[in-house]
Structures are given as C-alpha cells and as structure tokens.
Length: 145
Image 1 (tube, helix red, strand yellow):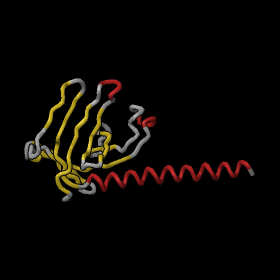
Image 2 (tube, helix red, strand yellow):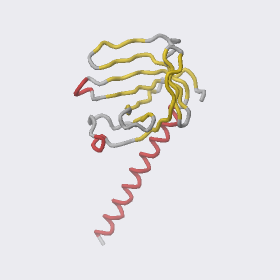
Image 3 (spheres, rainbow, N blue to C red):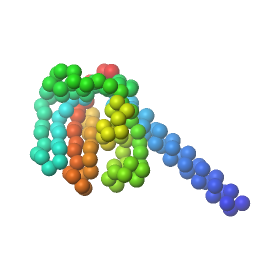
Image 4 (cartoon, helix red, strand yellow):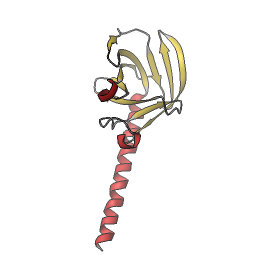
C-alpha cells in the first residue's frame, strides 16, 4: 500500500512539473510576439553599447517566425521555438533555468530569455561565471505581429 501511494504521488509530481514547463513556454511565446528594438548589448568583458530609440536594430516575432533588422535593413528571417529545459540537462550555468529561444532549429543558436515588467526582453548567451557571457536588451516598440 505504501509503495502504491508513493508511486501515485510521484506520478502526480511529474504531471505538475510538466504542466508548469508547458505553461511557462506558452506564456513566453505570447509575451515575445511583437516588435522589439535593441537598447543595450554586452559581449564578454568588452564594454557594452547603448542604442537610442529609433536605431533600426529590431526583432519582430510572430507566433512561430522572426525577422531581424539591422540598421533598418532586413538581414535574417526564419522560425524559432521557445523551450524550458533544466540547466542540468543542458549542461549550462546553474542560474540558467529560464526559457530558451532557438532560431531556425539550430542547436547552436540558442539564448536564454527573460521578460521584465517594463516591456523589456533580455537575451543571455554563454555563462557569466565562465566567460562573462553576452546579453542584449530589447524594448517592446509594438505589439503588432
């Protein structure tokens, strides 16, 4: 009897965890849809750059596709997906248990993402503890799809 109760509780725990991960993923997809403009970029120990509004460095997301503009010129288009993967499975930094975006089904073009309350989207790459990582901060400029 005790073994059966433990098995049932373990199964329920797995379902709850799976539901939370799916929910976090769907929230991230809904939040990312729209037009975003670059505000700050930092790469490793190199001093960061700040970008003024209207700089033309934009990312536009629909429910499954993206468009990248650099200096108001379309430079890349494709598909993306958002996943939530445990850092232990991914072999990443211990503080990286947040949604990840992968572009064009490439396992090498993956960034951790974080949404802030003030219409800010942050992309993180690398591991700050190892190589100081990279990050780019975008501000929502439109909810258009």
